[in-house]
Image 1: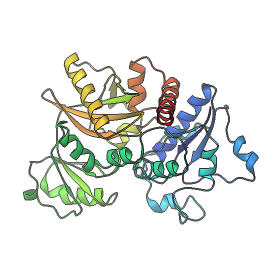
Image 2: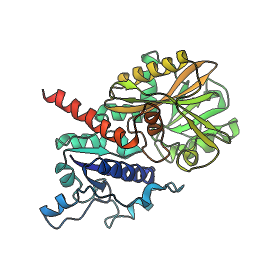
Image 3: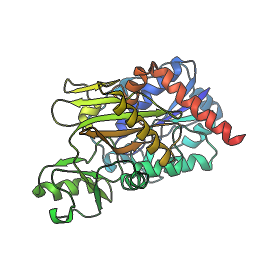
Image 4: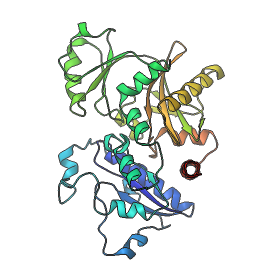
Length: 353
């Protein structure tokens, strides 16, 4: 197949996306597919129609972007990467032209602009096929307030929360005790997320979360074991348990190799709890209207799992969770990438039947 892997973009998770995109591209090339790795925001200058086809290759690409910097890129730093400083929008030169030349686009995007449904809507308008969920499901999964309300309506246990658009929140306005978790309503990779032990640190944490999004969540802190369940083509994969010896599973622990973090799949839990989380993950996936593949994260306190959030485009970096779960199910990384594409191709074929 001719496949565009779309990565980069202009979210705070740009560097994470470039790592995922690089690894996905090389994996698909190793399976014999002709792949073009395209940066959504930077695009690609073209001299003529022949150049488009030349972008698709089976040769392995530069893997220097696999390593992820700890730096959280802001708008100014990302805009400076392009001559027009982002004035012409999210899509760089010729991105749509290149995507139209492919059989399917593998979305290796992460963060606000890649996962909130806007890119998916543009691709739909140009009749370009892509992996992952559609516009509506992507937007619902990306916004933690909306996804939590859907969890609640579907009787999926989740942490209690309130939403705010101001940092001027007092302890008296929170219907649960400290510590609490503060996070941007839309975002990922724990960017702008804080575990707040006492009320005197609340407003500073909210101010930081609101620097990444116009709305923030204050969530009940659930102290317990942390798990993630990936979904692929309508089935749940074995869970992965995240064990962090010092601190919590923040941006650094997610993307920097260190001895503090262990990813255990399958985890050492009883079958009943494992199956309960898998069933809840599939229920959450379907309630949000997600398709193809995704991931639902859980915290387990005193044997009770709580769905924390859903991810419509899970990371595919060297340290990401879904490849660990797939491996526990006997699916190697390149096969996982190929199965994601095959699953979405079947979805489109059913739509057209």
